[in-house]
Length: 245
Image 1: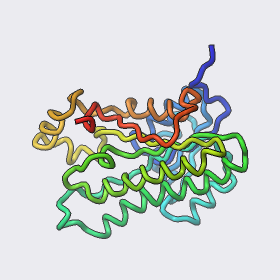
Image 2: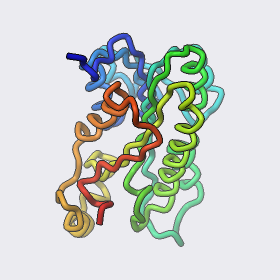
Image 3: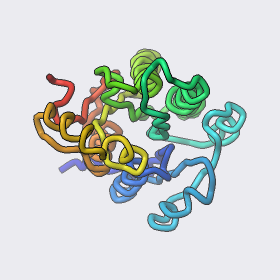
Image 4: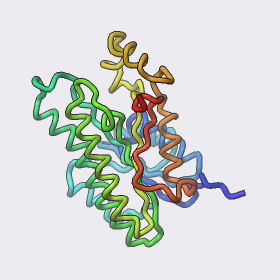
């Protein structure tokens, strides 16, 4: 039987590997044989996942093009997971801070664009195809109160997914997005953990609960794998049915 989830000898870059979803993705890919490169803003922040899993760490500022170019120009890759993300501040549009907006866009949209730009070059040069998975959000699919910057950044990421799928398809490079619901990470707990927010939100979700990191990592691995060899340009909700309302 063919093992479609065998990533042996396949180097896969995971940005935001210092975060909860990123680290879960690193662990799962490592379990399936991938040569994982865990990327994050500093060696110190990457140390826990690198020490735990034994994968390679790669520190760079993904909002700085010169650093992305330096890190990726000579890095052979089969796959990329653009998982780095910044939540920003949840609040009314009329009170939004433009500096926060710019920071969220710099990481969530511009950073993923730069990583994809330079990773695609080496993947095309290698001529072996590959797969890129962008970690988007349900906020790109439906409007969430107070999420102007975050929603805009993830909607931009979904659009980049479709364009990249169109342009890279002839090189046998697939590009897809996953659009998770809330995962109760430290970044999200301060808002989504409040009963007045959590209770009415989950009441509208068919499955009625938040997702776990592992429930996001598994579809990411699927889209990277040969089991998804005919899937590209897709934005896949992982949201317990929330956006199906």
